Image (cartoon, rainbow, N blue to C red; front, side, top):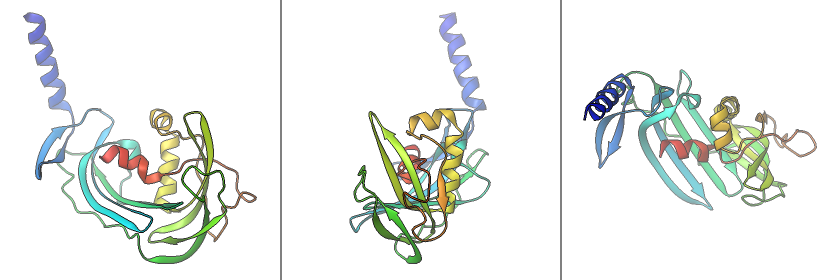
Length: 215
């Protein structure tokens, strides 16, 4: 009995010290403790487009690892094969601070940048051209592993997306969990991510990574 009481006291004390963030449960905002001392509170808006079908936007309030955060709002966006995804994320580190509004990321307005992308998801052939949209102002060349398979990645990506991937590769636990193989390589002129001009490096599905955390 004494052991159980001590365990309960320890649990209550550790929970009391944890950062508490807003979560939406059944359309009601609830303040809940984060599961790690490394977590921060976040507000995020996620939306996606696949083969022209639009999903979202979805507003999420939750805890996220600090490796996903900066001291400003980020817009992480990419076009990879038939997928387009974008997330706006704003982090903070005081109890209940993630009540703020964030920018809804644009996935429809084409810009002047064109990049190479892969002909299909997980395809080893990446010679298809694609026009970037919204905040996507970089071309990316990368490499990713998926179990026993390894394949190249070419994509349009936002500058914040390149910076986010660089931070993730420096975070050992997140790097292992998301199949990152090395640092991200990005460039800012059309078709600069061809196989002949860039060394292969990192990651696809930039928003898939953050999406797995915020959902």
